[in-house]
Length: 289
Image (cartoon, rainbow, N blue to C red):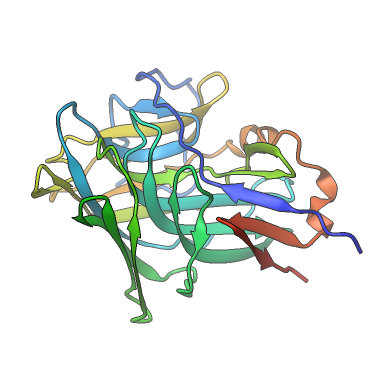
């Protein structure tokens, strides 16, 4: 049987000015009763969370912890996904170093994985097993000029991963993001439909700014809401908790159709194929039977 190659990537998107969300899109499937949506949020086509960026500031570290959500499919799209990550750069620059976890749903079956990515390269899958409900801590820090340490800790299993990489970063921003990834067949790329992740709670969201460790709120991080089409809400962040380093991102209800329609160019029969993800120079194969 012939195999179809399918690529998953995380796409850096320009952040748009703050906008008004269309009425009727406020309900969310995953938000808890005490979820308070962030006000005055900017909008992005595929990012939801917080980003810190101020001209003149130098960002040399970012970290956070979260519990990997149990995801389910939304709508009928054959492949769906979400990604949770922290990163440096990418808001006002074309460089971005990021690390986190993601879920890929195919025919209702879910694969959870940990990864890092240094744009413009594709993401690299790492050998740290992760599962739904695992507590994960991720940090990225510059340990020498253009040398970055990426550290994962699976707090549930006690397993860790560390890698030091050379990367020239603008150090122009820090991010804590829930993302709708990009995928494609061959050279055709488009947004993957966003699965239903319910709600992801970020804790210990900190950044190193001009050599000082600050909470996301102290770093003046700004909220980002994921919006597509004519103000169609897909996901949004909460306000910060009392420590300034905790917040949640909730999936919006009614977003399945918009997310599914964003998957332009993906043949429906990909659901019957082996599922390939490209990481850097090689291929990691997910086989769903």
